[in-house]
Amino acid sequence: MSRSKYLFVFLAGYLMLLVSSSTLHAQVRINEFLIDPLPQRVELINIGSLSADISGWYIDDFGGNSFFTIPQIDPLPPNSCSVFESDFNFNKTTSDSIRLFDKTAQPTSISANLIDSFSYRASSGSGITFKKLPDGIGNWATGEADFGFFNKSMNSCIAPPVPTPTPSSIPIPTNMPSATPSQQIENVYINEAMVNPDTGDSEWVELYNANEFSIELEDWLIDDNENGSNPKLFSSVILPKNYSVLEFASSLFNNSGDSVRLLDESENEKDSLVYSSSQKGKSWGLNEIGGAFCLQEPTKGFPNGSCLPTVQKQSSSKPKSSPSPRLVKPTLKVILNSSGKTIYPSEILTKKARLTTLAKKASNPTVSQGEILGEQVYIATDLQNSARSGTLPFISLSYSILTMISIFLKMKMSI
Image (tube, rainbow, N blue to C red):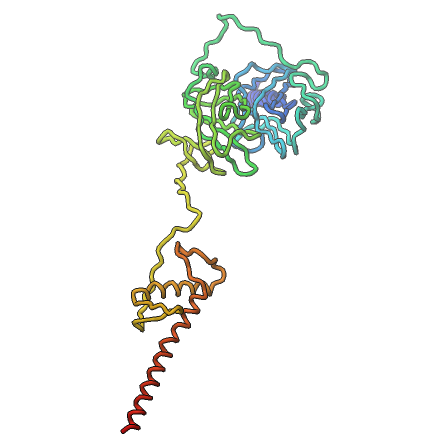
């Protein structure tokens, strides 16, 4: 056989291998899913002729940074199904999608490989699922939930348990860290929490795995204060030194003050965050410097940012300040008011300043009468009466001049 024929056979075999692998992946389909009530459920079915290893695959909605990672499980046999239960963040009142990705890359990566998907306009209703008829290959329909059973025949589609191998046949993994069972997990923390989201957005909690290995959280809980709202059940696999964001379809936390608690499958508290207030659209994030939580700009799925500056409470009234006196140079040593009382020069400054304030106030009808910077203002009649009292010195002076002229004329006539 010539070299060119060998090359042709090799390329043909390589292409067949690629097609076979692609076909294998393509045989796993979304067969049924439930949006409401929680916890949400998803059923996958293998309609191919070979078993499919779906460990590490991803179930995701449309958009966002959170997704569900399928834990390490046995390969899915042909013509069998597997059911997963969690809060997948499927929207109940608006349109959304369910998407299945293989383990090539996370759904948020541009390298993610989409296997199957379905988009819907709204929830099918409480206890009503979206399902394929016939299973795996038919059109989407709605009906009563029947997870673990074929949608058409109602026979069980759950694969029979795999026999436990003898100790001698158990392979020993090398350099392959696996997820740690829940009862042995430590060093998983609440890293950030959105308790008061913007209108239309959801509450969420971000967890951080500080270990050097992956961890598997199975049937763990997010809860608020004891005896508060119903806790949120979830299962998740978190990679080493990585984050997992749990976004809730319904609210759990109080805006005015509450706690965020991480509980294991036995409801033992593993970590908690206590807050006394919140700010709309801002998250409570762990401050790596001080080890305490503070309000931050949300960084869902990424390292936390810096704390927001502390906002000082502002009084509802403007701060009071003493008005600057207006210097008035008196032209007379003595002034009489409308009641005939003598006002001496030491009182001129205060009275004149207050009358000036009143004159400005009277010219501006939008300013309310009453207290001005803590002092009582004069009413307008005082200003008018005081103005009329200024004519008294002129009358007195005129009378004096007339008297002096009369005396002068009498003296001249007597000479």
